Length: 497
Length: 142
Image 1: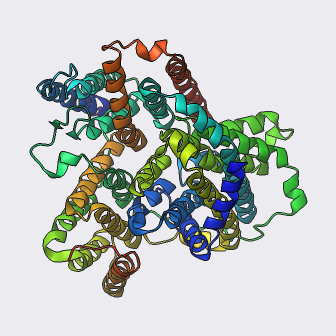
Image 2: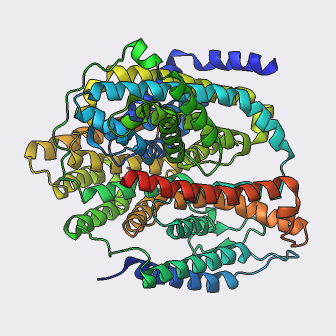
Image 3: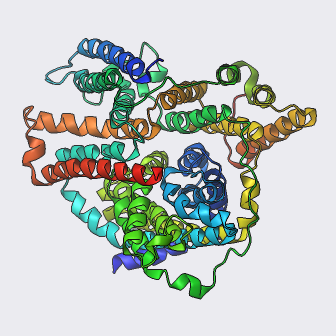
């Protein structure tokens, strides 16, 4: 009952004109970032996180979660209109969204996508509201071995986000973890790999590092294809489907949203896996499975409802355990830390109202996503035509401004540029960026709990497998890696076909 | 034809070995039996193993991994420009360095129209400056 009161009070706190305006702004920015091919919700959240430094908590979360929700949906816009997913999680939408757009119905394809995205995102936020207190209470039993095991489980994401080579994904994650060791070691406070620089004594600042790795490296890769156009884009009309037309797919949408919520809640999964599993399941269960791949409404709904349901699901491990499940939540973790909020079990038990505010913001962001997605859909083809020679330098300026704002330090801007260039070459040589980021974020969590566990057990590594919870988590990790690798292989086959 | 796996495998192996040496030389403090280099050493050993795996793939040609192509005439000037931009903030301040960066970057990326090269950097630089400094209350380099 106390939670219900807190939920109502949290709704009253966020339902102010100022917070709602910032949520709206966040959704619009998220759609701009998500729709621009190559730029993602993660890039948007990373660039705008430093901006939130001086803003109140609710307003900060309003902006960032608006970008998060808007960006996740908007990745489907280029997937439908130009056969290029805005983010990997929208790749399955291409299979039916693009053929539907090509058959003269781009508006309908966008309409099904935005409604499914809204439903998935909203349902997942409510599921998170219900589950967070229970999961939070359970995780109070966790000690260093369990947190170490959770960190490793989070790194299992490497298997899910390593497009192509798992070995290169693992090497990238290790590189990120090594990068995180720069600065003072957490046990004795001795400096490591600082090369005499006082700036590096505090370690590599997380937000500038994320901006460099995500945004600057993406801009650099786009400079190579700047002159390529997207060809002729169809006119968008009749976005809103009739209720009857949509209602027949209610179970597909519900199933996709549930799958996305639960898959997203598992560290190491994310929208790519959720949307493909949901798509495959919808195809398997459909009476019209022969229409899949040729412009099936059901295919778009299955993929997009699961994709956006990950937004709520991925917040569960972040808020209850302090462990980010994917790259966007890794950036959000940095944003919460900036605001002095440390996610974890005590946040749920001691400060549930803050968590409830985050969840309400996500619900409101999904309402705006629906409105902007429907009303703004005629502008989306124009959005894809934004000239790159203007957009790319502007993004670099935003990165510099945002990166500088974190610590008022030009050194951080240099870190952004260095890691951006490094990230670009990593990408060119087939090393995916998300594992590097996960390594950078999870590295300190893993180190602290690894050393803590070993010291308390007289350096006995068996502590991780003999304790029931950590042993179970590690066993689950092995299963995840196996399952995700297998799923990734079948997705590549499906994509190729 | 150069094989990218062999090249990146060899480079990361060199990094791993250098890292192992550097980690081993980190000291132990007080009574702790875990040195500051214990965890980085573990990571560099794992990186070394991954590098060997990538090298093996390269030699066995598990996948066709051709050396990536670069549009050097555009990417090198752009990289040099963003590095110059980062360093120029210290002595030229945000407004001047951003104006120089925007004009040069747009030109490198193929913008030829004079009114765009003059107007867009001016407008966007001042818009960003006013938004950050006055709306978000963030100090920018001056």
